[in-house]
Length: 194
Image (cartoon, rainbow, N blue to C red):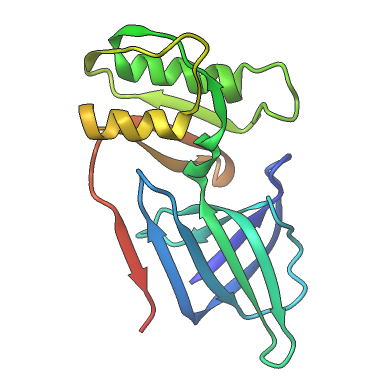
């Protein structure tokens, strides 16, 4: 299995490496957890906060690097990453809403990461889409409530079976971005090496 590393700000590929048999990959769209990979190289040209993905047609995983730890003796680097969906841990002001809840979530993420004027918060390579099913409901918050989009997603997942999936966006065979897609729920998955 091969990992590809990306600069988080520019989304340029900065490095790659092959994963040793020692890894734990956790894919859970509701509660993001850390995955761990032993990469067969030292001096990986990536840093904490950068992104990684698995080059595999059967596994769809994008992670945000949270630690890089070199093992000089073994000539490997232990890489830990949080699932990309953890970008939704950002806290925003919540407003009452009644209507299509997938559209509400779409608008909230769009305002936070895509149309945001703050260059440090805007993610230029991020796209968002949604299923057009009408998932109607109401959300009521106390005045001036600040909460994370991930907590809102957790509530929407439990109450309305809404989840967010992601995938890489390709153009002419090159990876050019990440798409978040709002859809109906499936189950989480844990993959471990033997």
